[in-house]
Image 1: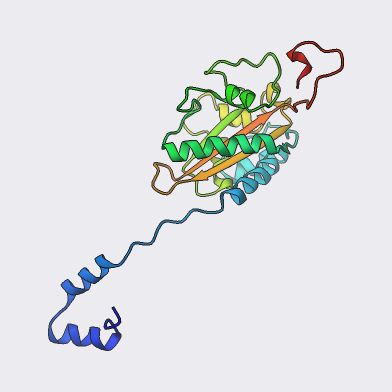
Image 2 (image 1 turned 120 degrees about the vertical axis):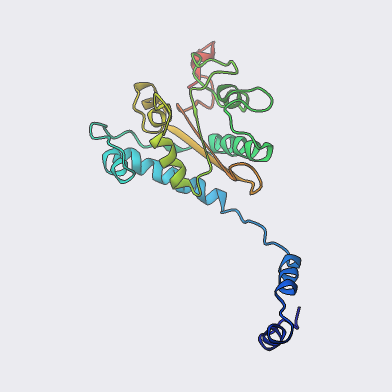
Amino acid sequence: MSWLKAGNFLNCLQLFGCATLLGQVLLAMPAQAEECADTGYEAIQAYTYLNRFRSEPKTYAKRIGLNLEYTSPAPQLRWNGQLATIARQVAERMAQGNYFAHRDLDGRGPNQRVASAGYNLPSDYPRNSEANNLESLAAGAPNGIEAINQLVLDIDVSPPSHRVHMLALDPFYQEHSEVGIGVACVPESTYKYYYVVLTAPKALDRRVAGATDESAYR
């Protein structure tokens, strides 16, 4: 296509009219692949922003048009590498499988996945496929900050269960001190970006001396 210089193109227009030819050239040019953002970076951005939102819920809610005037700050969450790995794997499976659901294609739910990955959940957390005490999902947001905003706004979700989870508006979630966030991107999938936020109580690495059942794990 070296002939398609300014002078040649002008002559083509003047002498022959080359709109059809130009259209053929443009169609022959390879389309640029749609790129994904750095998903690891977006996961950390989401984590940082979530903790800021939890520390000043009234201020951050007002910025997105939400009134949380009577909401108290929530404890800061600690980044947990094990939960982050699980969250990333779940996000990747959704993006690659082009689905968006808490239950994966193997029929497993959030509590099951986290427990089977070796994270020691409290014994009173159910292990059936419908059980979810840990996970919020977002999709389609262009970055991690917007994903958290999407979850807090919880548009058309009643009651706003994702907001309750993210901001620990229920005493149950105030017991969750750990968080892992995973992000995945597949441009040709329905939503392109998929986000998984997992929170949980801190897990013990070993049994408490003398304990004999699952209650030893937290």
